[in-house]
Image (cartoon, rainbow, N blue to C red; front, top):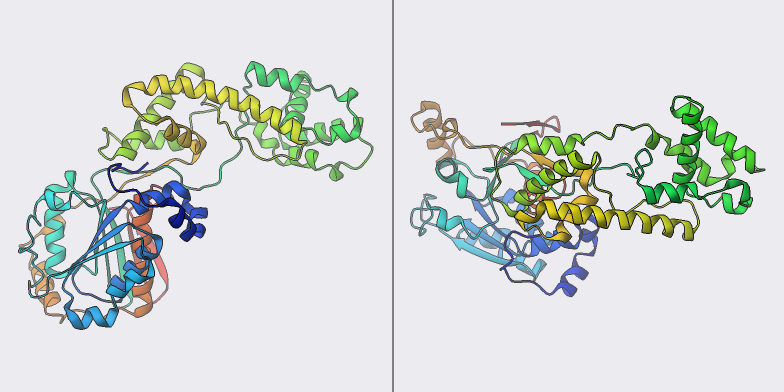
Length: 455
């Protein structure tokens, strides 16, 4: 799922062993993206915030990190920058020391052109103040449409900020948010309906009935309530479940876990209209033109195609996976096979709709599994207000920032928090997993509070 398939693939066995804990967070696909990513880190002054950011990225396994700035031998030794490499041999750390360039970066070939930034998947401007911040703002104002995502972060005394800047919204392919089971109990297709109707409770033993999936119990009481023209709600469904239980079972209702599970998931019967999900509508309303990033583009076309599928069929494509249930293995596998067959049919129809866009089927299946947790975040944009060179206040601040007369060294704890947070947001943007900031975070270390604002 990575944007640049030409980049060198790492030996997956050693890497996956190293990142076993992280794989539980963003999976093998997320780790592969990180291993093939190239991040540029720019800084105005080498400090603890820069080191914490680098340390986090090295430990998380970002494949290549290019560090550009003024170092000097003393600072390199003090912060043991080169020693970071030993923390993870799978990461390539490229240190470009421009001590003596007065932080103008003019001597770096093509620094002010898009060509210089093309190899990078993301750029971090950390502890970026003074002329460097001015330079970054000018570059992204002029070339933002063809430059990578930019993350700016800075700490001042007990305060700091992190700002995400990009030329298009960032899609989230797995926000890891909770989502309810999608068993289609209110809009079953013929095979599923036939399976549910095949259960004859009067011919089942109590042991067999205690192994019936909760989905079957719910569809059974739903049919009874509709036949009696009784409104479906939590109380009516539970009462119907108790009646069904007491008719065939001798023990207490609370002793049979499948009936308890049916009561817990009774809300699955209440959503009869099956509206088009709000999260997909949000994506369509946020992205106004075809994105340039591969993953953003794929998600955009996928959601458009799902909307077309929904218009044609009146429902969303069925997901192949179903949740675990307190039931017999045989019955669970029977249900699982029914959902898998229907999902395969829906995927085939969806792939036909998507055929002009050449999206890999494995990615379509991945998005289908996370359909209700897909998300999108608007990133910030550089505006003229960020680069007003004639502003007397800006000029004064830049002059004194350069001379280090206006600064207060950030609290070490604040530096550690913001440095790690910067690396974390970079990983979110690279993997398109978990929801990144939207899009600026202000941190107040005195009160230990944060505020997120959209710029």
